Image (cartoon, rainbow, N blue to C red; front, top):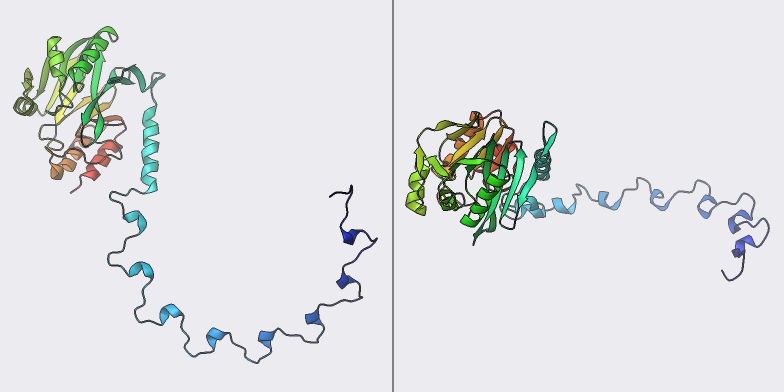
Length: 335
Protein backbone atom coordinates (compact mmCIF):
# COMPACT_ATOMS: atom_id res chain seq x y z
CA UNK A 1 0.00 0.00 0.00
CA UNK A 2 3.09 2.29 -0.23
CA UNK A 3 2.41 3.18 -3.84
CA UNK A 4 -0.61 5.15 -4.95
CA UNK A 5 -3.06 3.12 -7.05
CA UNK A 6 -1.28 -0.12 -6.16
CA UNK A 7 -2.46 -3.13 -8.18
CA UNK A 8 -1.82 -6.84 -7.52
CA UNK A 9 0.56 -8.67 -9.88
CA UNK A 10 -2.18 -10.39 -11.88
CA UNK A 11 -3.61 -6.96 -12.79
CA UNK A 12 -0.35 -5.55 -14.24
CA UNK A 13 -0.76 -7.28 -17.59
CA UNK A 14 -3.58 -6.39 -19.93
CA UNK A 15 -6.15 -9.13 -20.32
CA UNK A 16 -4.46 -11.24 -17.65
CA UNK A 17 -5.86 -14.78 -17.39
CA UNK A 18 -5.24 -17.43 -14.74
CA UNK A 19 -3.17 -20.45 -15.68
CA UNK A 20 -6.09 -22.79 -16.20
CA UNK A 21 -7.49 -20.37 -18.83
CA UNK A 22 -4.32 -20.22 -20.97
CA UNK A 23 -5.10 -23.44 -22.78
CA UNK A 24 -8.09 -23.78 -25.02
CA UNK A 25 -10.71 -26.13 -23.70
CA UNK A 26 -8.85 -26.53 -20.40
CA UNK A 27 -10.23 -29.35 -18.22
CA UNK A 28 -9.40 -30.21 -14.62
CA UNK A 29 -7.37 -33.34 -13.98
CA UNK A 30 -10.32 -35.54 -13.02
CA UNK A 31 -11.94 -34.78 -16.39
CA UNK A 32 -8.93 -35.85 -18.52
CA UNK A 33 -9.92 -39.49 -18.45
CA UNK A 34 -13.05 -40.70 -20.14
CA UNK A 35 -15.71 -41.89 -17.76
CA UNK A 36 -13.69 -40.76 -14.75
CA UNK A 37 -15.04 -42.09 -11.45
CA UNK A 38 -14.08 -41.20 -7.90
CA UNK A 39 -12.11 -43.75 -5.91
CA UNK A 40 -15.06 -45.10 -3.97
CA UNK A 41 -16.82 -45.92 -7.26
CA UNK A 42 -13.95 -47.98 -8.76
CA UNK A 43 -15.07 -51.16 -7.07
CA UNK A 44 -18.28 -52.85 -7.97
CA UNK A 45 -20.90 -52.75 -5.26
CA UNK A 46 -18.75 -50.47 -3.13
CA UNK A 47 -19.98 -50.19 0.45
CA UNK A 48 -18.86 -47.81 3.18
CA UNK A 49 -16.81 -49.28 6.01
CA UNK A 50 -19.68 -49.52 8.46
CA UNK A 51 -21.58 -51.70 5.96
CA UNK A 52 -18.80 -54.27 5.45
CA UNK A 53 -19.82 -56.31 8.45
CA UNK A 54 -23.08 -58.21 8.53
CA UNK A 55 -25.58 -56.87 11.03
CA UNK A 56 -23.39 -53.88 11.80
CA UNK A 57 -24.52 -51.95 14.85
CA UNK A 58 -23.36 -48.58 16.09
CA UNK A 59 -21.21 -48.52 19.21
CA UNK A 60 -24.04 -47.58 21.56
CA UNK A 61 -25.96 -50.70 20.46
CA UNK A 62 -23.15 -53.16 21.20
CA UNK A 63 -24.02 -53.44 24.87
CA UNK A 64 -27.20 -55.09 26.06
CA UNK A 65 -29.66 -52.70 27.68
CA UNK A 66 -27.55 -49.71 26.73
CA UNK A 67 -28.67 -46.49 28.43
CA UNK A 68 -27.61 -42.94 27.66
CA UNK A 69 -25.39 -41.22 30.20
CA UNK A 70 -28.21 -39.24 31.82
CA UNK A 71 -30.02 -42.53 32.62
CA UNK A 72 -27.11 -44.12 34.45
CA UNK A 73 -27.97 -42.46 37.77
CA UNK A 74 -31.01 -43.50 39.78
CA UNK A 75 -33.77 -40.90 39.97
CA UNK A 76 -32.00 -38.68 37.45
CA UNK A 77 -33.62 -35.26 37.12
CA UNK A 78 -32.95 -32.61 34.48
CA UNK A 79 -31.23 -29.44 35.61
CA UNK A 80 -34.44 -27.42 35.93
CA UNK A 81 -35.77 -29.98 38.44
CA UNK A 82 -32.78 -29.79 40.77
CA UNK A 83 -33.98 -26.64 42.54
CA UNK A 84 -36.83 -26.77 45.03
CA UNK A 85 -39.98 -24.92 44.03
CA UNK A 86 -38.67 -24.41 40.47
CA UNK A 87 -41.00 -22.22 38.48
CA UNK A 88 -40.92 -22.28 34.68
CA UNK A 89 -40.41 -19.14 32.64
CA UNK A 90 -44.09 -18.76 31.82
CA UNK A 91 -44.93 -18.46 35.54
CA UNK A 92 -42.66 -15.45 35.92
CA UNK A 93 -44.07 -13.99 32.73
CA UNK A 94 -47.59 -14.32 34.14
CA UNK A 95 -46.39 -12.79 37.40
CA UNK A 96 -44.96 -9.68 35.76
CA UNK A 97 -47.98 -9.29 33.47
CA UNK A 98 -50.38 -9.44 36.40
CA UNK A 99 -48.19 -7.11 38.43
CA UNK A 100 -48.12 -4.62 35.59
CA UNK A 101 -51.91 -4.76 35.37
CA UNK A 102 -52.17 -3.94 39.07
CA UNK A 103 -49.56 -1.21 38.93
CA UNK A 104 -51.96 1.18 37.25
CA UNK A 105 -55.65 1.23 38.13
CA UNK A 106 -57.86 3.99 36.78
CA UNK A 107 -60.77 5.36 38.84
CA UNK A 108 -62.58 8.27 37.22
CA UNK A 109 -59.45 9.26 35.36
CA UNK A 110 -57.23 9.08 38.47
CA UNK A 111 -54.31 6.63 38.29
CA UNK A 112 -53.37 4.42 41.26
CA UNK A 113 -51.36 3.25 43.08
CA UNK A 114 -49.42 6.32 44.15
CA UNK A 115 -47.23 7.01 47.18
CA UNK A 116 -48.83 9.66 49.39
CA UNK A 117 -46.51 9.39 52.40
CA UNK A 118 -43.04 7.93 52.92
CA UNK A 119 -40.45 7.93 55.68
CA UNK A 120 -37.69 5.54 56.68
CA UNK A 121 -40.07 3.40 58.73
CA UNK A 122 -43.47 3.93 57.13
CA UNK A 123 -44.97 4.18 53.65
CA UNK A 124 -48.57 4.87 52.63
CA UNK A 125 -49.76 4.06 49.11
CA UNK A 126 -53.17 5.02 47.74
CA UNK A 127 -54.53 2.12 45.66
CA UNK A 128 -58.08 3.42 45.07
CA UNK A 129 -59.96 6.68 45.74
CA UNK A 130 -60.77 5.78 49.37
CA UNK A 131 -58.36 2.93 50.08
CA UNK A 132 -54.73 3.03 51.20
CA UNK A 133 -52.05 0.47 52.06
CA UNK A 134 -49.69 1.32 54.91
CA UNK A 135 -46.39 -0.55 55.06
CA UNK A 136 -44.06 -0.71 58.04
CA UNK A 137 -41.11 -3.00 58.77
CA UNK A 138 -40.40 -5.81 61.20
CA UNK A 139 -36.81 -6.86 61.98
CA UNK A 140 -36.49 -10.66 62.05
CA UNK A 141 -33.55 -13.02 62.43
CA UNK A 142 -34.74 -15.47 59.77
CA UNK A 143 -36.00 -13.12 57.01
CA UNK A 144 -34.30 -9.81 57.82
CA UNK A 145 -36.31 -6.60 57.51
CA UNK A 146 -39.81 -7.70 56.50
CA UNK A 147 -42.36 -5.24 54.99
CA UNK A 148 -45.76 -5.61 56.67
CA UNK A 149 -48.96 -4.34 55.07
CA UNK A 150 -52.06 -2.91 56.69
CA UNK A 151 -55.05 -0.99 55.33
CA UNK A 152 -56.70 2.39 55.75
CA UNK A 153 -60.15 3.15 54.38
CA UNK A 154 -61.72 6.61 54.50
CA UNK A 155 -65.31 7.46 53.69
CA UNK A 156 -66.41 11.05 54.14
CA UNK A 157 -64.46 12.15 57.23
CA UNK A 158 -64.37 8.76 58.94
CA UNK A 159 -61.53 6.22 58.77
CA UNK A 160 -60.77 2.66 59.84
CA UNK A 161 -57.34 1.04 60.13
CA UNK A 162 -56.83 -2.70 59.64
CA UNK A 163 -53.61 -3.98 61.23
CA UNK A 164 -51.40 -1.45 62.97
CA UNK A 165 -47.85 -0.64 61.91
CA UNK A 166 -45.28 -2.88 63.58
CA UNK A 167 -44.31 -0.44 66.37
CA UNK A 168 -45.73 2.46 68.32
CA UNK A 169 -43.59 5.18 66.69
CA UNK A 170 -44.77 4.23 63.19
CA UNK A 171 -48.33 4.03 64.49
CA UNK A 172 -48.11 7.54 65.93
CA UNK A 173 -46.89 8.79 62.54
CA UNK A 174 -49.77 7.03 60.76
CA UNK A 175 -52.38 8.44 63.13
CA UNK A 176 -50.96 11.94 62.65
CA UNK A 177 -51.05 11.56 58.85
CA UNK A 178 -54.65 10.31 58.80
CA UNK A 179 -55.89 13.12 61.03
CA UNK A 180 -53.94 15.92 59.35
CA UNK A 181 -53.71 14.87 55.70
CA UNK A 182 -56.87 12.85 55.20
CA UNK A 183 -58.76 15.11 57.61
CA UNK A 184 -60.51 12.04 58.99
CA UNK A 185 -61.37 10.73 62.43
CA UNK A 186 -60.21 7.17 63.09
CA UNK A 187 -63.27 5.30 64.30
CA UNK A 188 -61.78 1.82 64.72
CA UNK A 189 -58.52 -0.11 64.48
CA UNK A 190 -58.97 -3.83 63.71
CA UNK A 191 -56.12 -6.40 63.80
CA UNK A 192 -56.68 -9.31 61.37
CA UNK A 193 -54.88 -11.82 63.64
CA UNK A 194 -52.91 -11.88 66.89
CA UNK A 195 -49.26 -11.69 65.67
CA UNK A 196 -47.13 -8.69 66.64
CA UNK A 197 -46.54 -7.63 63.00
CA UNK A 198 -50.13 -6.38 62.88
CA UNK A 199 -50.91 -5.23 66.40
CA UNK A 200 -47.49 -4.08 67.62
CA UNK A 201 -48.61 -0.44 67.49
CA UNK A 202 -51.96 -0.94 69.21
CA UNK A 203 -51.01 0.96 72.43
CA UNK A 204 -50.41 4.10 70.33
CA UNK A 205 -53.98 3.94 69.00
CA UNK A 206 -55.37 3.50 72.51
CA UNK A 207 -53.39 6.54 73.71
CA UNK A 208 -55.05 8.52 70.91
CA UNK A 209 -58.53 7.40 72.01
CA UNK A 210 -59.07 5.07 69.05
CA UNK A 211 -61.30 2.09 69.77
CA UNK A 212 -59.94 -1.38 68.94
CA UNK A 213 -61.98 -4.39 67.86
CA UNK A 214 -61.20 -7.89 66.63
CA UNK A 215 -62.68 -11.32 66.00
CA UNK A 216 -63.16 -12.96 69.39
CA UNK A 217 -60.42 -15.55 68.75
CA UNK A 218 -57.95 -12.76 67.95
CA UNK A 219 -58.92 -10.91 71.12
CA UNK A 220 -58.31 -14.00 73.25
CA UNK A 221 -55.03 -14.97 71.56
CA UNK A 222 -53.63 -11.42 71.66
CA UNK A 223 -54.16 -11.29 75.41
CA UNK A 224 -52.68 -14.77 75.91
CA UNK A 225 -49.60 -14.52 73.65
CA UNK A 226 -48.88 -10.78 73.28
CA UNK A 227 -50.30 -9.46 76.56
CA UNK A 228 -52.27 -6.94 74.49
CA UNK A 229 -55.81 -5.93 75.39
CA UNK A 230 -58.18 -5.44 72.45
CA UNK A 231 -61.12 -3.43 73.72
CA UNK A 232 -64.00 -5.03 71.79
CA UNK A 233 -64.61 -8.47 70.33
CA UNK A 234 -67.12 -9.73 67.76
CA UNK A 235 -68.15 -13.29 67.07
CA UNK A 236 -69.85 -13.12 63.68
CA UNK A 237 -67.96 -14.95 60.92
CA UNK A 238 -69.26 -12.44 58.35
CA UNK A 239 -69.87 -9.02 59.88
CA UNK A 240 -70.77 -5.80 58.07
CA UNK A 241 -69.56 -2.44 59.36
CA UNK A 242 -70.86 0.98 58.38
CA UNK A 243 -68.35 3.78 57.82
CA UNK A 244 -69.28 7.17 56.38
CA UNK A 245 -72.33 5.69 54.66
CA UNK A 246 -70.37 2.82 53.04
CA UNK A 247 -70.20 -0.87 53.94
CA UNK A 248 -67.14 -2.88 54.97
CA UNK A 249 -67.20 -6.65 55.34
CA UNK A 250 -65.00 -8.59 57.78
CA UNK A 251 -65.07 -12.36 57.32
CA UNK A 252 -63.64 -15.44 58.99
CA UNK A 253 -63.41 -18.49 56.69
CA UNK A 254 -61.24 -20.94 58.61
CA UNK A 255 -57.73 -21.69 59.76
CA UNK A 256 -54.64 -20.93 57.70
CA UNK A 257 -51.78 -18.67 58.75
CA UNK A 258 -53.30 -18.77 62.23
CA UNK A 259 -56.52 -20.08 63.74
CA UNK A 260 -58.02 -16.57 63.94
CA UNK A 261 -57.08 -14.89 60.62
CA UNK A 262 -59.85 -12.76 59.07
CA UNK A 263 -60.06 -10.93 55.73
CA UNK A 264 -61.58 -7.52 54.98
CA UNK A 265 -63.48 -6.47 51.86
CA UNK A 266 -64.21 -2.92 50.69
CA UNK A 267 -67.08 -3.20 48.16
CA UNK A 268 -66.95 0.40 46.92
CA UNK A 269 -63.39 0.02 45.57
CA UNK A 270 -63.56 -3.78 45.14
CA UNK A 271 -60.47 -4.24 47.30
CA UNK A 272 -59.84 -7.39 49.36
CA UNK A 273 -57.33 -7.28 52.22
CA UNK A 274 -56.20 -10.84 52.88
CA UNK A 275 -53.70 -10.11 55.65
CA UNK A 276 -51.18 -12.88 56.29
CA UNK A 277 -53.68 -15.45 55.05
CA UNK A 278 -52.84 -14.38 51.47
CA UNK A 279 -49.35 -14.59 49.93
CA UNK A 280 -47.84 -12.36 47.28
CA UNK A 281 -46.91 -14.04 43.99
CA UNK A 282 -43.64 -15.94 44.28
CA UNK A 283 -43.61 -15.96 48.09
CA UNK A 284 -42.67 -18.98 50.17
CA UNK A 285 -44.76 -20.40 53.00
CA UNK A 286 -43.23 -18.08 55.57
CA UNK A 287 -43.83 -18.33 59.31
CA UNK A 288 -45.69 -21.56 60.08
CA UNK A 289 -45.28 -21.53 63.87
CA UNK A 290 -49.04 -21.06 64.43
CA UNK A 291 -50.23 -22.21 61.01
CA UNK A 292 -52.56 -24.92 59.73
CA UNK A 293 -50.98 -25.81 56.34
CA UNK A 294 -53.36 -28.71 55.65
CA UNK A 295 -56.42 -26.43 55.97
CA UNK A 296 -54.96 -23.27 54.40
CA UNK A 297 -55.85 -24.04 50.78
CA UNK A 298 -59.49 -24.87 51.56
CA UNK A 299 -59.83 -21.64 53.56
CA UNK A 300 -58.51 -19.61 50.61
CA UNK A 301 -61.02 -21.26 48.27
CA UNK A 302 -63.83 -20.14 50.60
CA UNK A 303 -62.47 -16.58 50.54
CA UNK A 304 -62.32 -16.62 46.75
CA UNK A 305 -65.95 -17.76 46.46
CA UNK A 306 -67.11 -15.20 49.03
CA UNK A 307 -65.78 -12.19 47.06
CA UNK A 308 -66.06 -12.99 43.34
CA UNK A 309 -66.24 -9.28 42.43
CA UNK A 310 -62.88 -8.40 44.07
CA UNK A 311 -60.40 -6.82 41.65
CA UNK A 312 -57.49 -5.80 43.90
CA UNK A 313 -56.04 -8.18 46.50
CA UNK A 314 -53.61 -7.00 49.19
CA UNK A 315 -51.44 -9.61 50.95
CA UNK A 316 -50.04 -9.28 54.46
CA UNK A 317 -46.52 -8.96 53.06
CA UNK A 318 -45.27 -7.88 49.65
CA UNK A 319 -46.81 -6.54 46.46
CA UNK A 320 -50.51 -6.15 45.75
CA UNK A 321 -52.15 -8.01 42.87
CA UNK A 322 -55.44 -9.41 41.68
CA UNK A 323 -57.30 -12.64 42.39
CA UNK A 324 -54.32 -14.58 41.08
CA UNK A 325 -52.86 -14.12 44.59
CA UNK A 326 -55.68 -16.29 45.93
CA UNK A 327 -54.99 -18.96 43.31
CA UNK A 328 -51.27 -18.85 44.05
CA UNK A 329 -51.80 -19.19 47.81
CA UNK A 330 -54.25 -22.06 47.38
CA UNK A 331 -51.79 -23.89 45.14
CA UNK A 332 -48.85 -23.20 47.50
CA UNK A 333 -50.62 -24.97 50.36
CA UNK A 334 -52.45 -27.60 48.37
CA UNK A 335 -52.27 -30.87 50.40
